[in-house]
Amino acid sequence: MSARTATGTRVFLLPDLGEGLSEAEIVEWKVAVGDVVTVDQSVVEVETAKAVVDVPCPYAGRVVALHGAAGETRPVGQPLITVAPADGGDEPAGHATYREEERAGSGNVLIGYGTGHGGTRRRRRPRLTLAPEPAAAPAAEPAVGPVPVGTVGPSSAPRVPAGAGTDTPATGVSTDGVVPPAGGGTAPAGGTAPLVISPIVRRLAREHGVDLAGLRGTGPGGVIRRSDVEAALTTAPQRHTGDPDRPAAVADPAPAAHVGPAPADASDVVIPLTGIRRVIADKLSRSRREIPEVTIWVDADATALLTTRAAINAATPDAPVSVLALLARICLSGLRRFPQLNAHVDTEGQRIVQSAGVHLGIAAQTDRGLLVPVLRDAQRLTTRELAAALAETTAAARAGTLSPARLTGGTFTLNNYGVFGVDGSTPIINHPEAALLGVGRIVDKPWVVDGQLAVRKVTQLSLTFDHRVCDGGVAGGFLRHVADCVEQPALLVANV
Image (cartoon, rainbow, N blue to C red):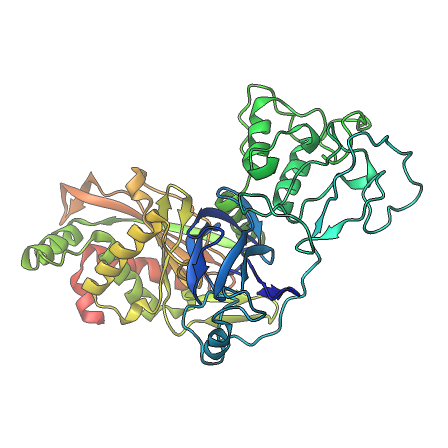
């Protein structure tokens, strides 16, 4: 994703970083204005709702602008970095090399962009900047009818496309895309409109009734960041929940009756539903809307499973096997017998699609929220390979280093919520999958063994399944098979 200016500079746009991702937050710039970069050199680290990603630039040359500062959210398709020819010529240095690599594919490609992809280019919307008004200019009467394109409020100064003769601040962080208050209203004190680069910030302010004209931006050149809006939400309740671009003096009409939750008090903690929390909320809400789910459960004696694990680890202490790895192996055995649960419903095609491979999702709680990294074709792995892959994957998920591709495409999920010290749950299916196995804590409980009461290691297993893909007989058969393997691990050998 790029744009080329008349001067030969290249503007690299933030690419599509994965399924369903529309924005990313800048974590750290790895280059500065004036640096010379090479093709596919990593220039910035960004955080999406799913992972932290290094973004390589597909152009070589000298950096002339960085669009956005650390902590700022950039929408997909907006400028990220501008590179000019390193030698001052019309052709960026190394660009011929880039074109050759583009034909062959450089290998350093993210989802949706990069070298080696010759798909259609997304049409870019023109970016506009606000020409400052003279400080002493009197406010004109509001115009009747729509405001002409290229003008802002009472000023007749044209809005100039970014990069066409506009100055870049000394910091090298461009303030392109600054948008004035809508509706042709007057600018705040000082004769300039609120400096808002990101439409995400404007949307957040609009949703929570924050008046952007009253905020002091902490970004370069006074740019208002998302953190500024969030800080405003925690300091005082908003007077109205209308358009934040409207002048503060214009009050919203009083509603006939209050509908919905009460307005936040000054002492309330207001947490915007953004980032990964918004992704989780949207996905779980969709699952509840679309999937007619049913949960069944059974208690199982896990004493023999723990004994088997201890024996395996005693024999090979350099390659330990976790309980989660054994449970994963049991799930794979069950899905081989009941493939109806390794599926998803294609609502548009009115069909059920059973997957050939088991792409096993593992629910992992992290500091960034609940993630479900996926082990693709898990059925091909041995138990020790499963254990190693699970350890590496969960560690990477908690560190935030998994690529977006490793967080999508699952066909069945294993959720060990027993680590939280709870016995049972009725979890929500990870859409669009058809089933999820939950495992509670393993605790000492009285259990009848051969007619005698004994203390055993007992756990509760629950299966939540999409009733569209199968009926209770299949779901019950799968869960019973899992429970039997937990109680008699030797059954796994018989099913290999």
